[in-house]
Length: 277
Image (cartoon, rainbow, N blue to C red; front, top):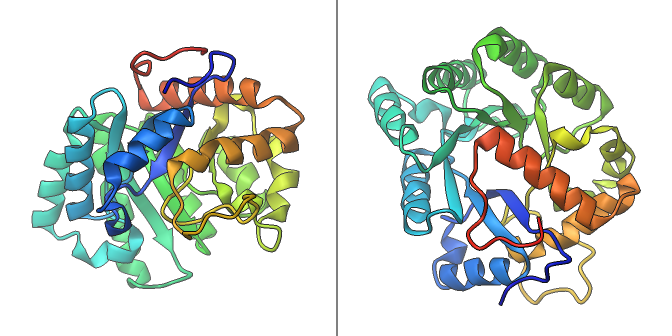
């Protein structure tokens, strides 16, 4: 079912579609996304195995699915010299539009800080060599994160602060650097995400991207509430409506600008049989 021509299509820049919660109905999830007007998706790679799976998924859905290839800071100690060589090969695949998910996470601290920093440096260097943007994760590590990023930025082609949930200080630093900002359903959480309602109007249209980060971060304000707690790309239009309302613009305008910004950053083609953009 095609989405109405009056509704420009959306791109989900961050969906963990290799997650095992999608194993039973992954094709249905992809079809539901398309029916909801989410015509393209970037499948997140967070470790060597999920990056390879993301490339495989993208390969079987050309023009509709794309992939990132990277090692999340939780898995930083896994990026040995051998794994880095393997990741470099994976990241060279034409389906891979960004290096990452990479960055720093001092909230969970599943990997030592020194290991996280070294792994972050190595993936930024990989992005420099490949000429691909970076898909970035940061939590409770802003100082080290922005310092490392600034060191590499002159040689990078761009990047996105994926799943942005931080405050104004972090936002200003990212925007000044030139990062795109990925907004998720966190903005729909009246307990933890209300501050984003005030912040999203400050993001220039050409730096604002949209994502679900499924299966995580199901929007809390969905009505009716789904039976499952699993998030999926078909809910991206709901997130877009909340973001658009906070910015005082129409969902159609936001879809156009975020779509254009996403295509520019990740060098995406137009969606297959796309209409209304």
